[in-house]
Amino acid sequence: FGMNVAGLLGTLVAGALAADHAKMPYSIAAVMSILIFYPLMLGYMQEKRVTDEELQASRRRFAQEGEACFLSFMMFVAVVSLTLCGLITHNPTINGFMAIGMTTLIILAASLVLSPVIAKFAVFSTLQSALTVSTSGAGFYFFVDTPEQFPEGPHFSEFFFTSVLGVCSTVMSLVGIACYQRYMSTWRYRPLVMVGNLVFSLVCILDLVMYTRLNVRLGIPDHLFVFSTNVLQQVIFQWQWMPQVVILSYLCPPGMEATMYALLAGCHNLGVSVSSTTGSFLLKLLHCEPNGSPNESGQFKNLWIASLISVVLPLITVFVLINLVPDARQGERVIEDSERSATAGSLWRRWRGEGDTPHPKV
Image (cartoon, rainbow, N blue to C red; front, side):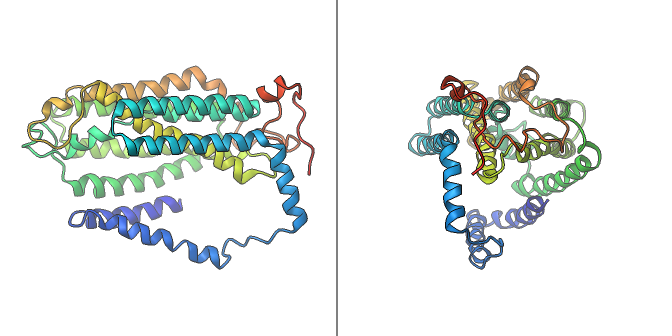
């Protein structure tokens, strides 16, 4: 909730500033980020100083979970590799193959070293987000190109596209969260994930209507059509995302909650980053690379195909790999407190003959 409220304020300010000073929002964001050190240094987090005994116990705990620490290191390597590759080369093909390679590496590592329940959901979350390929790079030019650049386009102003739609998105995200809390907070994970993804994909198909300009032939104004689809997408996106927020907290063994939550959320975030890179690769394959040049209508000819692929791929993931999602009701335990290990029963431990025996308490 707090993130959405802050995002609403940021969108209101950024849209107005960016119209005249494109770099100003970044400068303000940098200053605001530095301010977070003030409450941290004053101890607003109410953390207590640990004793030497507690520190040694914590270190022994993580030493016993060496595989989880190894996976964290592999995640670091993957993120740094993708970042450096993006800085060194702007070739979508090279970046695309690098993204696919790093995603495969993390999926294999997670499947190998994490306990079965945790590993399955980590793989599902990574694949689902990675296969939701992003076409926003070309979509931005589709919406804001001028009549000289794209005569057939909707010709939205940058203020409308960033500020008006941005504010709408944030407000409707709050509505989506409220609806989820009211009507869906007791559903089981599997049907909720399936319904959320299915409905979200069906709504995203409406983008094809815009990209093919069918809405114009039907007499539906561009502004009204985009505003309506944006409202639906943001509400349903929260139905899709909130169950993952809940389940991550139940997949963290006692004693290493922060580390495992960060690691599992990192798997999802890695997938999101990869989706942007693979989306650029897909757009290149479809010869859809607009850049704001005059008379670039031909660059949008296959944009609807890219959008269709971005809708279908995550659906395949959901229906084929839905068994990777725990079959439990929200609020129920996914792993027992007695299973204090994030790696007990993993493939690696089975190969080493350690079986399902959890680590003893320290």
